[in-house]
Image 1 (cartoon, rainbow, N blue to C red):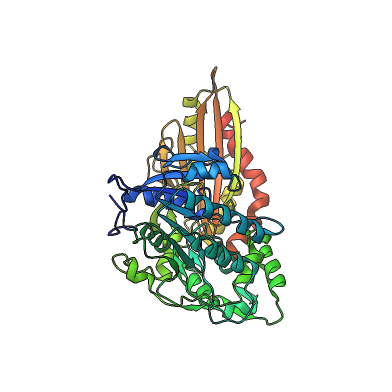
Image 2: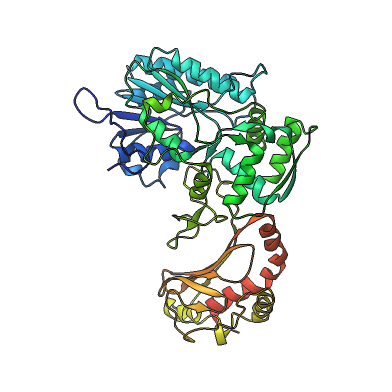
Length: 504
């Protein structure tokens, strides 16, 4: 049953009446991993082409797809992947490659197009970059390469749909993460001239709808189509709207004309975790407007119910509330601006917002039952460790700024249930004998958790894994973490030892 992203779209079938077989390249990338899920949910059969099949093992869809392992420069592996395919999604690029990435991309596209023609693929779908048709300026290497790749695929003789997008709004998207980090970390910023460039961002869910919908278009439909969201504004306005959507204070943005693309790339690389090579190529492409020529694609692929996703809604969907089941990797759909967002195995390791952790692992001869009794009794009259003075100091500071401090104590001195208040914590999850997770309710510029996991050891004993997790909110959030970081050397080792061995 299709979900809301692809609802109402037609399904392409082969001559035998089966649902079409789709090949997805770039499956370990940001778009590819998400596209596979949508294709499967819509009813398509999916084959995946990946350089390293082992990297796909974490995906929930891995058992539902056929995997062909190989490099995009290996003609034999590509031919095997394309055999019997109805629709081929070309999501390959070399943006992170050093040196002449343009030649690499041209060579890959040429070989893929030739082999797709030989394999009698019914359609190719390529996600490229939106190009300003009105400018006389030379395209950046990144955008020129995207344009050339589209031309190569469209000239292959295989009906091809090239979808050209600008800034994609979704956690894990390089463009979005650059926007996020710049806005969250800098309440006052001097910026390059490209912040005045007009942008037509598009939500990742709408990109995926267009990609899935392109598979079933009539064979006679071929060409390049711009895809964009319902709004157009400058990059500066986009940052201000992001801040508003994320619950941040209004940002002060001062453009400086002397910040060249090279200088601003270094600035982006310094302020954000986006790798410098990628930042340089993204920044170079922002000198030109990214606004759709027309909306002709909407006559071919119907809008979702309710229309295309507005920018603020797209941001809110990207900034999801953390799901209680797994703080580190699973995030629910409820909006909580400023929280880290839904990292998937295909997301780059710098995506999803900053997440600071302090992990302590100890092994003890005590049984899980004995260790659990100590863990469950934490706080209240029992205190936290031999460094309880540090928590008491934090409680006093919390009360001074209007927080709850340590005055709430505990409902029961030895036993907890989910939802219990515990000093300035809340019991968020409890699996008796295995897991205790507390969510901080103290005043701070971010979100914080403290958890203990207990694992029985072979031959007896227990492994105790203690994690402190902090998701900062804005620049002040990062400053807060580092300001209290020296205290962690007293507090966290003491707590872990208390859990593992008891107070000594």
